[in-house]
Image 1 (cartoon, helix red, strand yellow):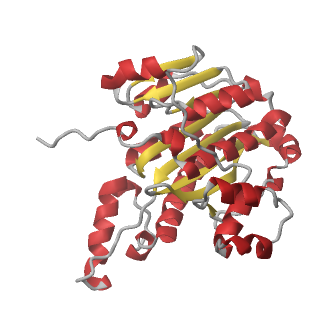
Image 2 (cartoon, one colour):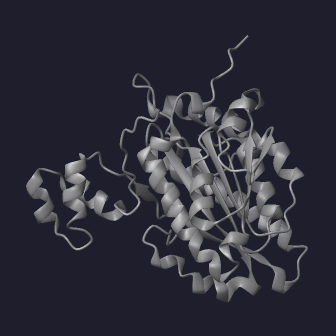
Length: 329
């Protein structure tokens, strides 16, 4: 019998993953702009809290969202999840998201972050399809998956491994979901794999909205606007794709949100935004912070940092977490 895999929260502390922490803050900043559509505190938040509930804590404290649902697949760890639940307003649901999501009501504006730590699978696509079918206008759907590339064996030619890689991906997302356009090259190289997963997820949203719109009147017709197209790596390359589902009643209000004024908001589906915070000492970080946002690279490079490190920090310094060791008795 194959041994059961350990949950990711037993391998990683998600609170101290630098790029992931920055991503949460970037999403939270964008969520504030939803106030032009609905009061932000009136949104419901659905996510996977695990044992740290880092996103729940951030969105509750900074956005005052009080209706929150955490879906936990590993029910055998129920006691740990319940013990670590930070606020009573978090409603715990145990079971597979494929089964839990259909049990929920969908009559209020919702922010859904399907933050998987595994690869894109048929199960993930089922969740994306279901949420796209159910959320009301003004809701957000965000999905994160592991998008590590498939590596070509060094001792084999591309022609010899093409079908092998395609077969591997077929098993990953199911034969029925494999688009005809995919080739082995779409699965090799970090950027290629990220774009492949992104396209499949966005196609799933579009397909479901087309089906849904066939039953709606012209004014109720729904569209999807891509907002987030992040890639980052703390230990594996992750892809986060997300956006807002809206109808004509919210078109003008969506313009008032001015999401495009945020540098990291996607301009088009090809625009992958890399979250890459460099490893700096506290002294280096303080030095750069004193010169941001108007300092020059030439000035910063005097302390021995590389130009790309300075550029990455300058893009993301407002979202970069700062860690300190504190002993609690």
